[in-house]
Amino acid sequence: MAIIQKTYQLLPLALAAATAVWPWAAEAFDAGKMEDFKTTNVCKYCDLTDAPLGGRDMRGADFQNANLSGAVLSKANLGERPMEKRTLVTNFEDANLRRTDLSGANLHLANFTNSYLREANLSGADLGDAVLLNANMKGALLAGANLKGAKLDGAKLDDAKFCKTVMPDGAVNNSGC
Image 1 (cartoon, one colour):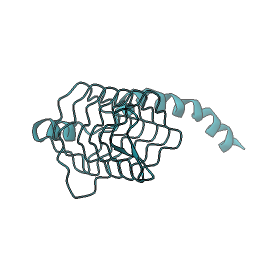
Image 2 (cartoon, helix red, strand yellow):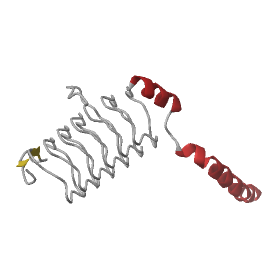
Image 3 (cartoon, helix red, strand yellow):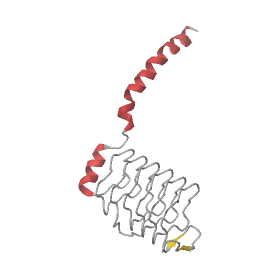
Image 4 (cartoon, one colour):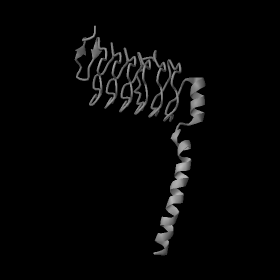
């Protein structure tokens, strides 16, 4: 019984210690990888969870199999990505990609679950088989995008602009041409 009482007495101290560490733990990205990325524009298999990347020019960046969950990429330019043949399985879950330029990007199989893609430029992007569950894509530009096989359950597509857009079922949406 004394051991149980001591455990309960130590519990508040353990919780206080965990809370004190929390601000440091909130930034899960690897600062060294981020510095490497800044100079090489390559972030293969790296973890940039919760990284502050908003407003950066990252045209041609290579995020092959990277984890960018929760990253802030609002107003970043990730356009002009070459349409490579390899499969990219980048994780953008919960990422803020508002007004981000992802035009022409190869995002095949990427995970955008719960991401914020409001007013993002996805024109010409390959989003084939991508997971866009509950993504906010209001006002997104999807002209010429490939969404074949993409999972859009719960996605908000209000005011999205479609023109020559291949939809998940393979049909072409020209409603905004």
